[in-house]
Image 1: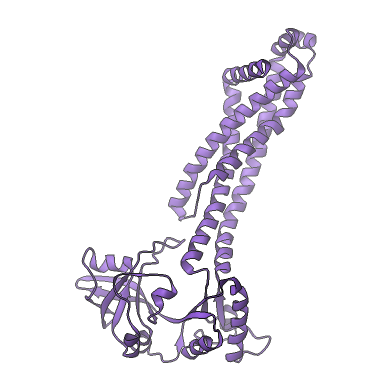
Image 2 (image 1 turned 90 degrees about the horizontal axis):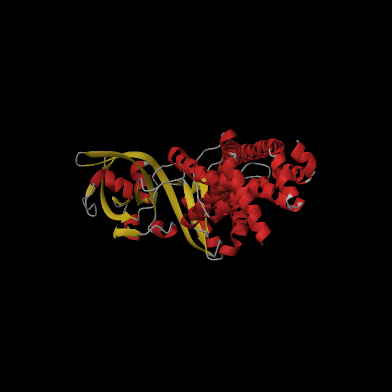
Amino acid sequence: MDRLLDTLSQALTAVRAFKLRTFFCVVSVAIGISAITIIVAATEGAYKRAFDIVDTFGPDSIMIASGSDEARATGQREKTLTLDDVTRIRAQFSTAYLVTPMTAAGMQTVSYGNNRYSSMVTGSTADYSRTWSWPVVEGSDFTEEDIRRLANVALIGHETMIQLFGEEDPVGKYITVGSLPVQIVGVLLERGSTIGGGHIDDRIVMPITTVMKKLQNEEKYVNGIRVRFEDQENLESRVEELKFFLRDIHGIPPGQPDDFRIFSPKDIVKFLVAITGSLVAFLGVVGVISLVVAGFVLANLFLLSVRERSREIGIRRSFGARRRDILLQFLAEAVIVTTLGGLIGYGLGIVAAELLQFAAEFPIHFTWKAFAVGLVLSWLVGVGFGLQPASRAANLKPIEAIRG
């Protein structure tokens, strides 16, 4: 134990003594570790954001959207889902406990008093808040009676509420949507921003019949259908069944493209991981190259150090130091230097990640994994690239080393 402590003490003394060598090694390792740290944190952040969105989307839910890229390419209409499709899905799928049609009137100019704002207007049924697990926190939801009588009522998102009403209570007040007077009956819970920095809460939800007849002049087609299933474990098979069912009732012959798209939680995870992939690949290449360069810098500086310190090594050997002691001392020096580089690199990674989040709203999530991966990699660089200089130092013959 005394020998080990003495070896570590010698290593620390050498690290402090050879400041320029230590500086270059620490900087080269820190650059590589910072890139690796961002990679791990970005990967963790992407998965965390994906699963957060899946929780919001609903792990038992799917979304059917009108039209498809293939259908538009063949000249088919973009709106292909109908209210009749909703009725048929409800009848066909007994485990679908919510089947909710939705239609989008797009961005509409809405106003209250002197305040004007452009907000997304969506039409849906009284199941909208349940379908999206999006509770009404002030006022109340609209009702089936509102749907039947084409009522001019609406739920308002938090961002739209702030823009129009400020601190004023919006419930019971009238706003103008386009040229349509609409009474606010409820306020939706604040949800926050999307991955691209947009506001999920920037919306107005009205009865689907009101939007179709009074804003769209539409009687049949809707933009999407939201479905939630009781048997969540069978969701992927339900997606395939729905696809086959919709192709059948839409009369799409074999070999022709779908005229709809179906999105499941699995697709959300794939999408967000794909977004992260390009950055992770780039930073991964940069990180690996930086660590390899750092390793070569360390190896060369330590080989130079062995030459400069040959007399010191010879004297230590002549006073009883064993080859193992010299080997361990140089390896300890390398590991201490790379550990410092790893710690500084982790700090740089945190700073760089904050800038990345600020500039691009990129999902970053730091856990113990980022720190552990950075530290282990710095040790591997220290041991892997420090072994050859340490071996050379340990194999110097005492007399020749002193003469050198």
